[in-house]
Length: 217
Image (cartoon, rainbow, N blue to C red; front, side, top):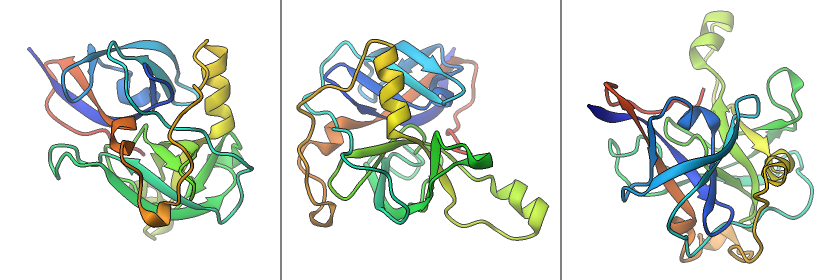
């Protein structure tokens, strides 16, 4: 018997290619969209925590990559499906800023941001104020580890794979980001129509697993 073992978020970078975090799909027998369409793995990299997936049905919308350099303090939004089916099934958008230009152990393939993320956000896009993809949400700092180590509770210390690393991964695997993604827009005015077609929940099925949610940590 197959049951849902985890959920995450993915986003389209072309009409039939979407990306998510590797750990979202690593132990799945089947990877599905919410409507039941089965996805196949094009490529994955556990070190970068990224995977590219192929869908049999084209998406009418996909995201464009950000223009310009990553900068400390840049305003960002994380889009995803936290606690999918437990707290609801609507797309969530949270805001924050780029808080560090490197990840754990100063790994500059990743960067830190403060937009709140929850279990289920892994694999979603981190977008800039014009709607361009700055990175892929992969993790949040382990609260338990920090409490045990320092006695304090960390707040909104989250990590994304940088846009350059994501684009390089896609090109190396023959699925470069497509042109004609959603045009630039001002996130202060909200996201445009079709944004929720470009950012979708990812459902993992595995044999005999109990229902739970992916924890980006």
